[in-house]
Length: 345
Image (cartoon, rainbow, N blue to C red; front, side, top):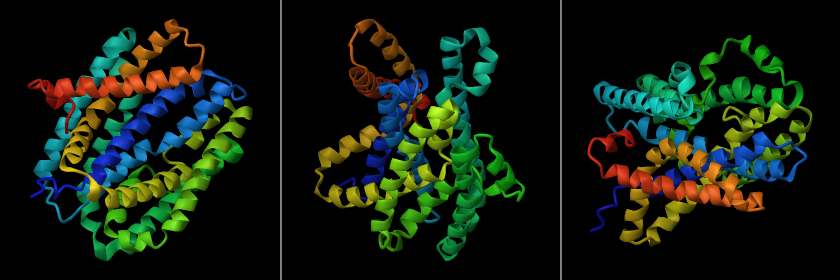
């Protein structure tokens, strides 16, 4: 009997893909931030960064899939323990990064965390409202959940996109805020969409051709808008890379559906050994998320002294090195008693 049969391996694969996306965002971002839009380094960095924007959406979609599943019990006590553990992990890793990179301004760096630790604050907040969401996230309320997501896209995601295209002063978002629909803002829609994709997958599959088309178009627009608008306003990339941009939402959700559909069929042909490897790698992804920023920083410093004479080789070196070393380090930490609790949920 296949011991892994009850586990939905496709979600483990999606976690691995997601962390690769996050790593590439932070590697390619170096070239987006440090080069002018008319430089080839910026263009390649923008293309890679745009493609990788599925990273965070995938993680939130996966969280929503399981945390909002009413077929699985999630008591307040169990959720409280998860939140407490996340808080401890946040404190430890925020202190770690503040000591290494911002010791001169330790208090501020510790409180706000290293640039990638924003996700821990976000996920803690999401877990805090999970008991409320679970009360109405039910199959009989599917139409209401779709309605919530539509409101979110119209009053939160779309205004940010339009600000990036036309104003760069958040004037459209400010107008949208006059309706006081702040409760539909943020990334909660990804969380709900994760549950919807699993619960209403048969109906969603009927529109897969449209979703795949929307996925490709959205990605192309993210790349083009970032490239073109950044030529006039350098900070414009913040609008089109943001997870609350409607293009990123469409791209991330549609790609998630495509990948879930593909791997759900493919895993039937995987051997138990392959599935075991996938599960083990998946269990390391949270740790990889925590440590990868320090590895990127280290390898970026090394690259400066290697004289590779090709920024593409630099990207390959930093991305590949970060991925391999992050997984190896987390695998080692996982074997160490007590320390392993700092990289697992």
